[in-house]
Length: 545
Image 1: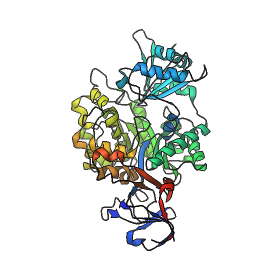
Image 2: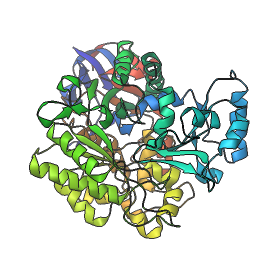
Image 3: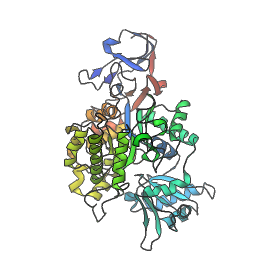
Image 4: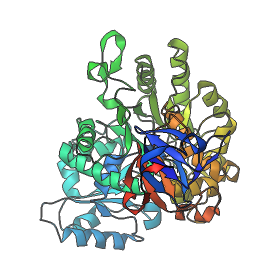
């Protein structure tokens, strides 16, 4: 007897040889068959899906789940259109807090506001309270005097970390703006977060993810650096799972900062743990290495200056240190996820991957380049030769595309957040959001952005990089599974696959592109269990399908 039988569905199986199905059977958390393979079998639970569309569960290959969960409890600045509106929002929140409490906000956009918030204005708006506002890119933040003083920034006593920027005015005074690794100076005042608080943040995020059809996510950096929240961050995921509040399957990327030397010139976590340790619900993924910054902050490492005299950006560390770090991780059995946005950083990363494979061959390792935001034509065949997985974020095109265009100029726009060129080169392109860094992380919104590539200002960026809706869906399913080395378990609707499924009220591959993000998620299943929408399904009595 089956555990679950889904009848009367329009299943998009993502199988070229059998792209559609109408009945799906589940046993022990796995799909055991479709259509005639299961139609006559009895089941404990039978659902009449009323002709709804069924797809494999969606995967976000690069997100920040803890960070997003924490942000849900922070002051949302994404709707602020002027600096005065932002300061008023900060002042209103400050008035509700004790005199020594921190005012923490996120998602402000200097491109919309006209410039970054200023330290003196934050001092006034917060009434002297510590005020910490995070840029939507996550690569910058601004802080009030109370924080800068405590961090040793005002008097210059705190050394600026390699790869970090503390902005100062012409008089040498800190403006309050901190970029890249310099954010660690503020992080040090609030971290580590308690494990219980992080577990609660994970639970908040998981509830949202389930409503969006997400069944698997990759947490892109935990444990250390400015991206991590606690040395015990993995324990927070274990706690959320123990409480039954981690509904999605999660792959964890440890930040390179938490790795240390092991025997025989190897690097890793204690006990030699590395990529792949764990189970089908929670496991260790690649090691995360930052090689540069971001385009919106003009800190990405580029080969030609940003428009308007913006310089060449910054590398995350000395080039030889970065190369050695990648080489050691590869030799130690890790998959590497290198954050590389500018073409100069991508050159460095490709060179390191090539050296690693030459000196310590590991066929099929599937190293990744997170973002791969600015890839020159000559870099495409080098990526393909190494079977590197590029992990771009199409949603950035809408949210910050106009900012990126202004920073790079029209001549380099065709290189930005490629998709079609990656596919034509023979690469798999998994979908990801980088949530909460820029706007929504909803998969269906991301699919629309892949198809349209239109900025919030209405400009189409690199039209030749568009893909159709079926390919966009493949990015969230089959290609995302490939990126994690799990194409034998996820990404298709067929016997043997995990029963991670999404029930939709329309077909995202056939509706107009402008309607893709309006398709509704009716239910989300992980391992055959409804983690969202189960109470709304139409159940029949168990019995013959």
